[in-house]
Structure formats: C-alpha cells, structure tokens
Length: 101
Image (tube, rainbow, N blue to C red; front, side, top):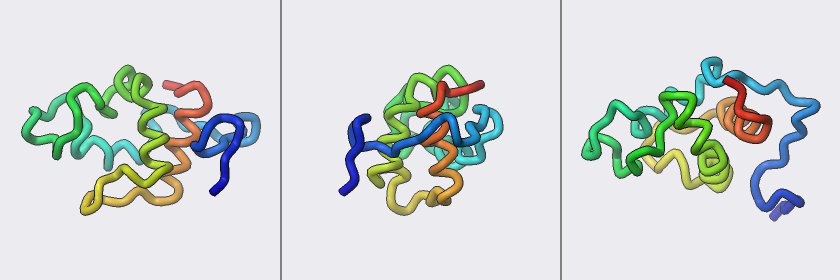
C-alpha cells in the first residue's frame, strides 16, 4: 500500500492539478443525498448531523474527512451512487488545494 509524507491519503500536487471551485464540483450531488443540512436526522442514512456538503462552509469544515473516507472506500456507502474517478479527483484536489469557493 502506498504511503506518502502526508499520511495515507491521496497525494495531490497542487501546482499541477486543476482545482475546481466548490460550485463546480459535480461530486457533491451524490454526497448530499445524505449529507445535506436540509435533511432531518432520520432522512440522512445515518450521516452525522453537521457533516454536510450542500454549503461551502460545511464542506470546507469536513473536506479532510470527506477526502479520507472516499480514498479509503468508506464513502459512499454500499448501495449509494458510486463516485466516478473524476468525481473522486474533484474531492481530492479541492480538499488538498485550499478548498476554493
């Protein structure tokens, strides 16, 4: 298993990647099926309250966790819509490179 100096997450070279802005990321549409501030606790498929990706502030606060969970395959949950390779890259680049709004 590959490990780098930043722990065991994806290694992103922010000098060479294109980092999407929050509003440009299509990946969030899959996350917010459960991780949305507008969903009541019983409608979130056990997603913790406050771990949301429908607003920039919440997504920024949870960016590192989101990247780690996606990288390790813990998110999305089995049975949820899978993230494409491009969508995973969006999350990795955004979380690694200053979470632009």
